[in-house]
Amino acid sequence: QLQAYGGGLVQPGGSLTLTCKASGIRFSKYTLAWFRQVPGKEREFVAHIIYTGHPLYADSVKGRFTISRTDAANMVVLQMNALKDEDTAVYYCAADARIGGNLASQFESWGQGTQITVSS
Image (cartoon, rainbow, N blue to C red):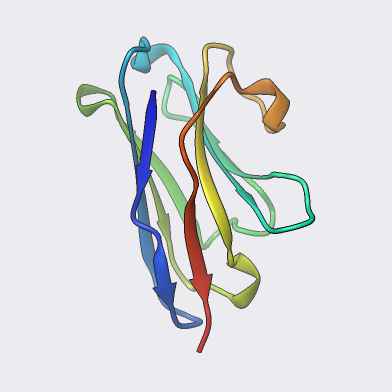
């Protein structure tokens, strides 16, 4: 199970941190990811981090978002800086035993979404 938290309302240019805690999986071996979704659109890849700690980012967030993992705490964090209006979405954490992946269909476990609204 995955539990995500940390969403909220933030002004453009601001920062937010999302945290996802996992239970019931061999966390240290899993690829952990964040996706986001807006109404009427497919779930969009944001970032993932594989078991070695190597990250991958969507072009739209590269240089602004940072994904990290703390295996001892079964936790993955998405630090979001320089937020833009277009970052507004429901954000989901995901996990899968396979290495890598940037499609929602490639992830077997999902947390509940947390809303992020970027607005002045």
